Image: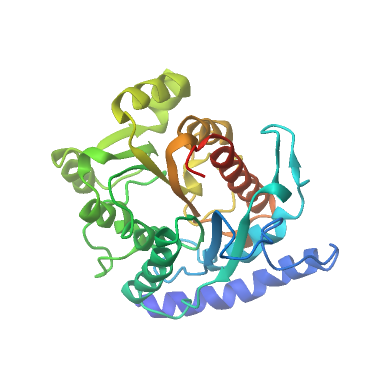
Length: 316
């Protein structure tokens, strides 16, 4: 299969689909191009938001590279004061750096750029909030975090060692994370799709997996109670592939998979571990495949993550 041809043909398709987004935006007010309320300087901020517009290894739908822009636009839909969390975002020191210039780079080169910028954020004692882009971008952030527990929310296992002759393909994301983080410190949540050999190898290596079916049958609170006992006081990084959410709530993703978890499940996970979260990414929103509802949900969840960390993390 000629992957480069597929990428170019999908780019042409996205140009056509972009016309729908543009026509919608022309019926909206104009807004700044940064995430709503993220107006503080880099130096004075506790949260650094940045986008990684990259989707070169996507295997079904291209368009995730457009998500940082669309999610930022959607963020202006919300009041600065959040009723549910009781947080006023105008009081949170947030900075939106903008997007990294990675769209045409190779996978490893892109990850290196993410790693370089994330290192700057983390070394300055700030929390990275990363908006993708495809899931492979998360590897670059993880390369700069030590002694953490990774909560990997994804419909897919992403544990292949190589896919389409690329070790940094989005289908290899969790495998590359496991190169950095001990397997005992990773939990894959909401999984409902995997290749047979991939699943067998993950289990053989000791990866903890909780499927979306198990979450539905046991209930999210039971899962969270079990996680809390096992985690102790470890710092937590949450990597949220938006396809973990059922497509009835989030249809605009790169690789939708039925029978997912709910947005409320995701929020409960964030709430439970917000007191020790040291980073968060949200990836694989593909805005060309719906009329904005997935980007709106994504923007809201990013805001909730920031609010909960701000409220509950004693080191902020």
